[in-house]
Image (cartoon, rainbow, N blue to C red):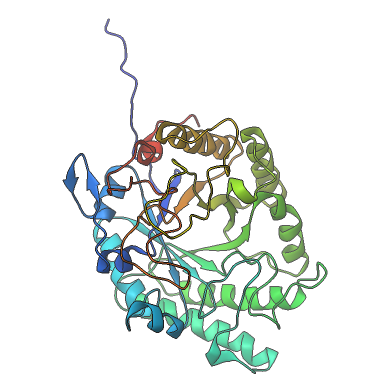
Length: 364
């Protein structure tokens, strides 16, 4: 009797385990000359990710990001039209979508949650209504184009709340923040009443060490009607840096709140080198000791991280901007990329071995 052959790769279904990639920069990168290669051949980036096991593309949406015009030569990205273009490409490739609503004209993160210019000086009641109407209108816009996302984030890295100052989380009190979250959540649920695709709702906190107190705070504020607790996990800013600690934290969240838990942003460096004059966000010393810088260790880190998420009962992972290689692309801080040493491509745009963490046969 012949020995049974062990599978070396696996394509995961979305409901089995989410293997996502945030490709929000892709259109802008391509407009600035970025090209991507797999096995020595130039290919469409989304096709490359699908072929290596991705089953979802995460895409950020800003409200009215006119600040970009000065640095892009007059083009807007991460607005409704740019997101539509990217969603259409992802859906055509057979991939699901996580639409990441920032509720801001600009980057939203734990320190910065600027209210869109269109909503400045509104009363709190009017701000809540704006969140509801905007969320609903965005979903209706995409539904009319057969692009309804399978997942939707109500806010991005909202550790300290959203829509500052009115939605700021104050001294652990998430009452107003929770009210705004619930307004966005209600819009998604109301949309889903008559929609063929009913988006799963993600709420999002940065870093595993903050997930416990934050989830407790929003729960106390009445935020319970969501499907997925999304967490960012970057080793540079994490206090949870052993794989066992990742497992333990995720298991605590799964058991404590009975929600799906996903790492919706992560990345790990493969080199300390720089391909351009734009300083990298992760320096050569920003590594976990057990995973020194190399392409093989980038793959090993990602495989171990996914297994640790699975071991804790987690439901998915999304790699942040793995296609952000150096190009002629400009932003406020430089030209090129501050992330090319975190990408899943080398400096020439060739796939790295870590791309295959998405199709590895994990233990469930």
